[in-house]
Image 1 (tube, one colour):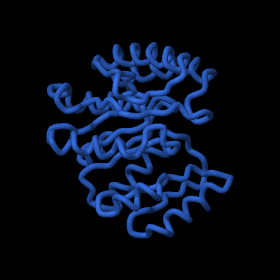
Image 2 (cartoon, rainbow, N blue to C red):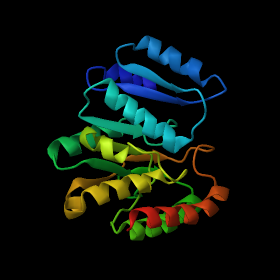
Image 3 (tube, rainbow, N blue to C red):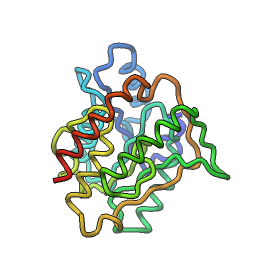
Length: 225
């Protein structure tokens, strides 16, 4: 999937793979891909596992330091959200220069292929309600693993490590909100994805959901002052 996308968009996008201290053959697989596309594909290798939040944060900072990109996106490695959604996100931000972040949202609707397990959907809606209330923003889906960010906000959004392990996306929104309170409703936008697939074994486990309320409280305490 990665190779097909890169082949079709070599003049438009670069891809940076963040290897979060894997101990299997992940790094070897990434090297095979990047060797085929040396001008468009790069690896940022973390020697020790740091968790998704820190891997995303360091990967974005690495990308921002590597080249003068106008926008940087991050996608979950399982591609539950297909890479082709980046074309739609790009169109949104190009047509709306005020937007500093475009979020993909998993909204099940006619004309879209959103395949999500019922239990995960219900838990996701409960979580999103609490997250929206804490943020004070009418956000439908904070946790879809595909977002496009304007490079100019990276210094104040990704400079410090996140305080949560599982729900750093909520922290990203809190940091943007706290730096842009007067115009927050005009600089964020949600994009309903056209396709999303619930991939087994790669999402937040049900047992981890019990830690989420504590992480939401940590966010509320730190950012809602």
